[in-house]
Image 1 (cartoon, rainbow, N blue to C red):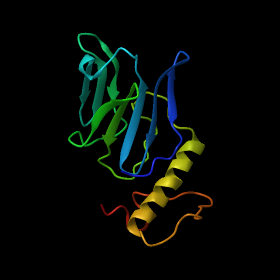
Image 2 (image 1 turned 180 degrees about the vertical axis):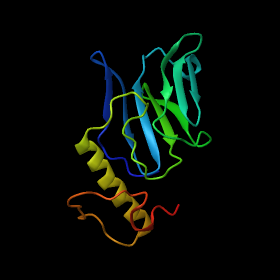
Image 3 (image 1 turned 45 degrees about the vertical axis):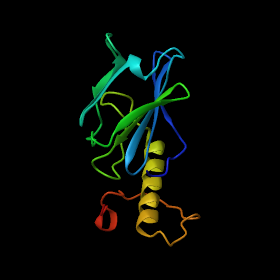
Image 4 (image 1 turned 30 degrees about the vertical axis):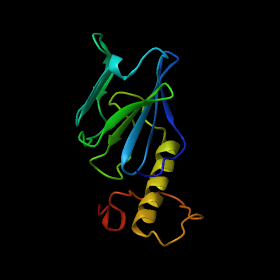
Amino acid sequence: MGELYNKRHKYMNNGVLIYEWEQTIDEVNIYINMNLNINKNDLDINIKCKRVNIGLKGAESFLEGELFSLIDEESSYWYIDDNILHILLTKVKKAEVWNCVFKGHKNLNADDENDTKKKMLLERFQMEHPNFDFSSASFNGQVPDARTFMGGVKY
């Protein structure tokens, strides 16, 4: 798993927090606060390469939609911890910056997108050069795409 960037993005609907999310070079993580009375056996969650459906068994989906990009459904999974539903989606296109989780949901603003690009490029450099210290590295100006910069992602 890659480094999480400690800034969860919030998806709100009519002033209500629906979910929070964050991404790494390899994955997208979704967090949904659950009611204390709900356990894993109450949930109906379907993760496919292009879509995710989340709901209670026997009820209409709470959250469903087409994903921003493709995921590897075999290595994507979900669990509940401390009443938070955590859904881990493994990206097919490593180092791709997702602007949102579901198509049609609010996109990242330009600053958040640029920060994510910086952190993904740094994460890629750290993975490719584990003996180097990148702790004080920074980028100025336009950040290149981690997927294609200097030959692109090789894993």
